[in-house]
Length: 77
Image (cartoon, rainbow, N blue to C red):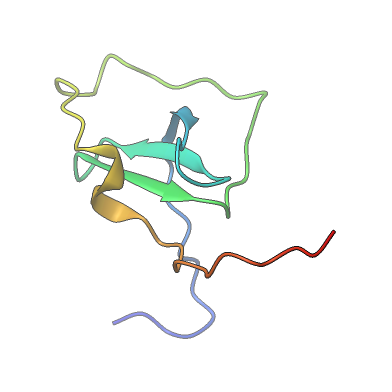
């Protein structure tokens, strides 16, 4: 069981930008999923070890979107 102050970060691989929101697409090889998130921290000085990973199988982009839809705003000119 996880406590409130336990770390919840997971290592993922940046694979691109979402086409429908201002977010990043991240692949998690441990559970073979792609998520879309705006809360991402990049470690640019580190590299990924591809030797231990299995074949990459990506899910569809819209499968795990964590943003709530918003109403369009009306602009008066």
